[in-house]
Length: 45
Image (cartoon, rainbow, N blue to C red; front, side, top):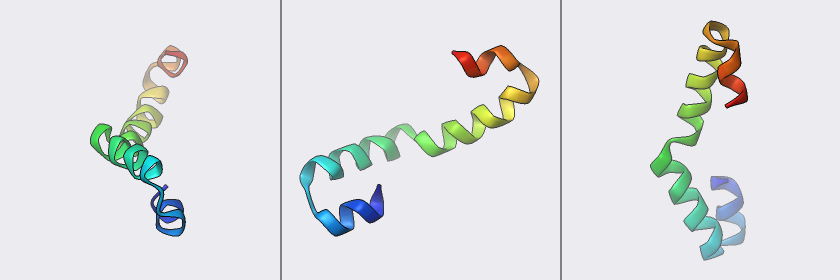
């Protein structure tokens, strides 16, 4: 998303990028990948 924003410079992409950083979307996905091995039903939620 960062690279796309750098190419397009549109405020709506900056807003989404900031929200993703705030909520730590990538970190949450990493945590989910670790948790899936422990609780397989969690990935559905």
